[in-house]
Length: 76
Image (cartoon, rainbow, N blue to C red; front, side):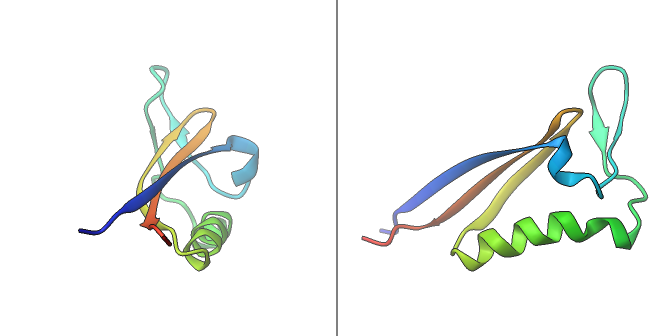
């Protein structure tokens, strides 16, 4: 049986100044038509956590930033 540990991380909107999210009045947000040049901030976060052994489970974007859920196998 494999054991996992999880990490839930919040990234404020300011952390992704190069990523454009379009939000409607009810708070629903999407990443429609994001230019390739603006994806570098998100790529940096994914690569940094991946280098530490974390796998992205889910990410949700909102008007104040995004929340990521990560998992990795326990080291014990």
